[in-house]
Image (cartoon, rainbow, N blue to C red; front, top):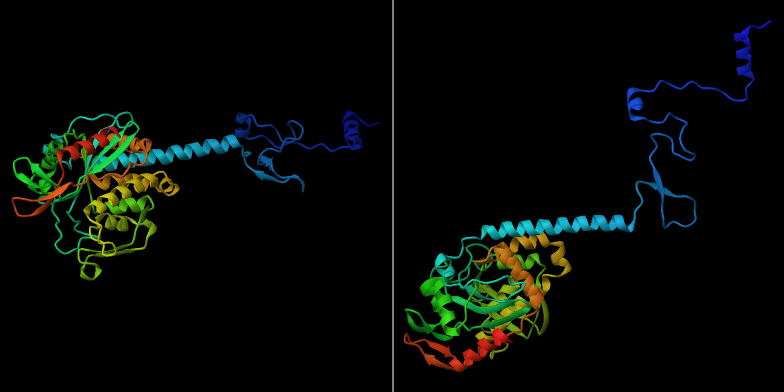
Length: 385
């Protein structure tokens, strides 16, 4: 007669399923609370298997799945916002570092001639923009005949007052050959003020000539200006027929410009050259006033290009190059407010102080004259529109 052990063995053999002994659970499994294999809610994936999800847009063709978390509009927006914050944050940091590197490039004597300004996002300031005939020691323009490589003794080829901020953006260019009274030096062309006393004397001369307060100063760096324009993808301006040789033309170490009438997308160097043209053999009626208008065209084109897709994708590079293209009393935050103020104000109308006559200067040179009434009218338009 079978004993109890033999009866239990027989019962196990007669059952319609098979029993398996589980392997011992490791320490990690015990501490982590892992479920033993074969247990869990119905339809759950076995332990260690990678969770999979169904393509939400797939229709028919079976339950195609891919590993990972489901892509949702909320998740895409989240990562897009993170990328934008990083991109703008990086650009801001680079801009501030680059601007700080330019600190101290304006002499204290020039700063003493400036009046305090406000935040150009909310209020308008008067900015004196100066372009001198100083040439870079390397790169384009460095080999031009008769190049002046020093700031001292340079003459200001470009003199422009930009009233910007608080929804305002207006400019007034003063031709470099305009006759004025230079404090301490008598009557001369206005561009001689920079050569005689640097930016401080030019600021003082412009203030006395126009009766305006000047809040900030920008001196364009011709060596770095093309780099900035290239960083934002160039600029587009409309011109007539241009045939010009600058500094003797290409064959003499200078530059030659030939443009047909119409719109032209210019590189940084081309934009600089177009801004410098004073004599156009294809249109002899052009003069220095025409050149001043082209310079304002280029500035408006730069402003328009700043919000382009190209600039956005190259924003860190543009942010770094922008402060390098100028010397200014303004720090990073003031330059940033200038940028926002110019965008809010829109494209500035082109305006040049028109001469009313001419005169022979004490040094024998010829200069353009502007009556006090014409100056007052132009200044009033700049200030009040």
